[in-house]
Image (cartoon, rainbow over all chains, first blue to last red; front, side, top):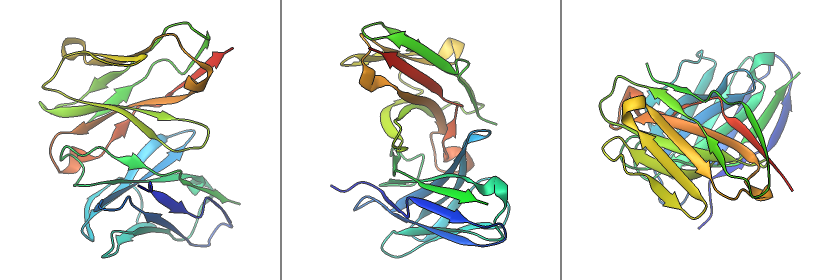
Length: 115
Length: 117
């Protein structure tokens, strides 16, 4: 069974630009969560989607948004990039919504560098 | 608010030594899950174990064992006879038991384990 696939693996963008990251969950998984990992703040929750609905959202500005498609694939978008957005963005999938006896399985992440 | 503290930041051991990674958590929930994840250099977070708050039995899986003590809010992870392949960053995490605002994973800062040959 293929794992969680994130594309692209690496991205370099300039301040002020926007970026879209993609995540394909494990087949059969309907819940997708996004996390940001930085050396200073560690791993922080961005949002969770289940059946195309956002179920939970972390404490990030509105520049961070996401969506989930009917095939459970998810995208997250960051607009007006700032240097502090440089991070490893991790996507995770599970069969049921988080908290329903369903552990998260993570992808390799997308490393975003903002210059 | 939920909080996970991993006081150790870096640990270095020689192969075949035993090593214990500490994890202390805080939550107001009466039911919750605790997790350990491993992050090798490739970046992927690898799920190791999930423990619910109802079950304080210790668990052993090969060279790995976990000690959950609700009285001290700790969920420690021991690797017996460490190997070079165990070198990675290890994260302890906490989530609520039910769907809702606390269902997200709250991670500790991670412990970088280096196992030298």
